[in-house]
Figure 1 (tube, rainbow over the protein chains, first blue to last red):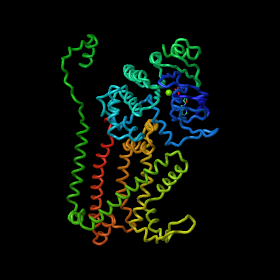
Figure 2: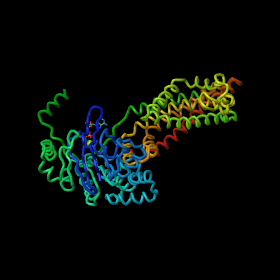
Figure 3: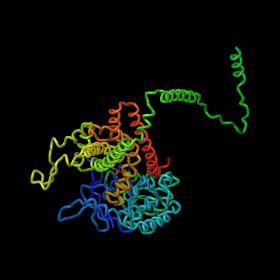
Figure 4: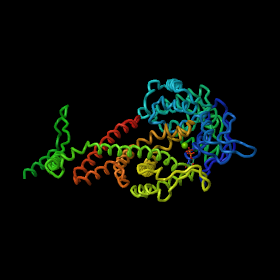
Length: 251
Length: 295
Ligand SMILES: Nc1ncnc2c1ncn2[C@@H]1O[C@H](COP(=O)(O)OP(=O)(O)O)[C@@H](O)[C@H]1O
Ligand SMILES: [Mg+2]
């Protein structure tokens, strides 16, 4: 489903991702771990082409993201095509980033209406279904400011789902939440994982990784240091850095 | 002495606080200075109103006679037309120039920057006189291939009437200011909003219209209202082109009858009334765009 080959990204002189090779199967859950600044967010942002990598390529469902290949060259795609590709890739941000001037249902229906040209009534009906699915059927007309952090993040997940994406990327979806609100968001993500959604999740919730991840990837200084099933990487890490990181997170 | 002895007594017997009753009465803070300020303001206001009423120099009779006079009404209409057209054209220009100035394209950025620089530098009155004298520089304007043959041409003075020159000047001038107001509004929106919209694949123009602009409006509106009031009064500068707007018209009248003060008062009161109307509109528009922001 997702295939990353030789991905390289730097900001000026700072190499943030170096030679990343990763493969994720359809329906799989991949958890990305790593210390702050190791390039986790940048990796996710390269997958939906919010950042443009200098080298390497990303394929989602066989389709090259953000680039077009002709003989030995990769050509940057036009903005319109990139935007179309992004409709197939959901993104859930650490800071929710809901549109504050739109109600919950309008937040969710906006992209289906404007990017997929769905009729308004149908998009709103679907948005209500999705709100019910994340347990917020009674918050249809609430503005983001009237919702708790956990509720906002659940609306943001519903907003990503509204495009029926092949893949959803989560960038620390629970890091901005009060501890007692983390559970409600993880519950929604657990349901998605069990329903066979392909997910790549950056998180420090080791419990979530242990329970649901098919693969855990450990990133450090822009490199994949190790990867494997959670039982291996979390319980028997081979690399010192992974061990040091886990002991801090689990402390 | 009694103070001292009482102090000594308390230190000798550490105070045991009297038992608190269940309900304590809250006494709101008192504001004695507020009442003194109110009194001072009322005295000054009374004095001012007394002066307005009793000083014969204001000539209230003349004022009343001209306030709704036909030529004044017509002039008022011209002022309103100039303000309305100047604001609409100005903000349309601003909505184009501001994203240009923020765009990734260096050519667009430079063009917008240069435009704003030039049109903010030239005083409005100077610019108006330039446009009015365009015929002196170019007596015919033609459409055609650059440096090549022309398809058709018109005389400049036919194309640019005095009113046209005034409108052109106001619109170009306003665009530069509006561009900065709109740009400030766009910059006030969290960068992550645009990113969220881009991640959802929302088309570019729609991102601007549906996501960015409505949020930017909250920062744009107070400044835009300010600019609109400014524009309303700037239209009085157009008198240099002998266009019959409000200020020009009262000058014409007092030039004839010598009643300077009451006629200036006619213009002043109209400007005050129009500004009040704009303020009311501003209030309701701001309320409309604060949707979703609890206050
Ligand atoms: N737009 C940017 N410009 C410059 N440096 C950036 C930018 N985005 C991220 N970085 C840098 O790249 C490194 C990796 O960032 P990030 O991917 O956000 O790490 P993580 O999500 O793992 O904490 C950090 O050192 C960060 O400062
Ligand atoms: Mg991050």
